[in-house]
Length: 213
Image 1 (cartoon, rainbow, N blue to C red):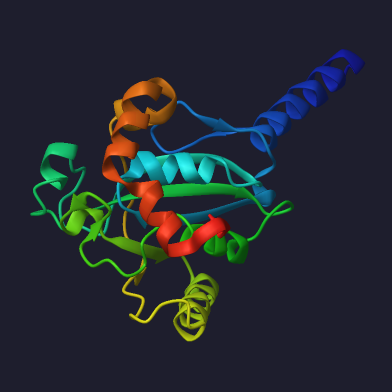
Image 2: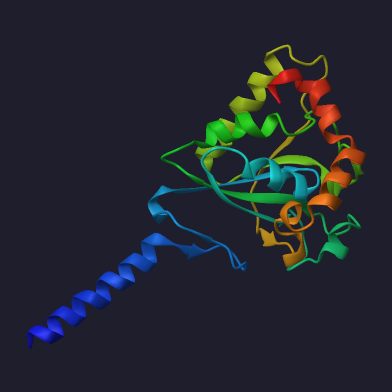
């Protein structure tokens, strides 16, 4: 075996290894994450309009990427037009990718509560209907236990006189939403801010959480 062949072989293998560990595509979108796979954690949260949920989680330290999508329904590859009718059973949600060396699922749960109205049923803020209900979709038993503990702690804290209605549900197939929904708050900042303000989202969050939000 020639020295040139050995060097070429090792160079190719090193290049492949870098590609595998440095980045990978997310779902069917063009986004990539640039940390090793073993550091990547995944969580799925529904908090009403996924434009807002995506925007809120993109600001959480340790989050490396987010994807808006649909989950929990009975129709394969649903479209936005189908989901908003409420007939497919899907909920607008966000798949969150995070760096496990910088944050944790428990920390994301704590951040999540401050972005939603945990007392609302089948709605969030101005968005009314089952596609906009708040939910935590757990991916394994550990996430289920952490989510349940987090919800119980909020219920037991005395923060609210009413019970927390946010659902905990095992994750089903997550379908990425159409491209125009991804990073909507960045692509259409003026329209997004107008929607968020008119929806009264931050006003309600201030009423619920005060300066914690």
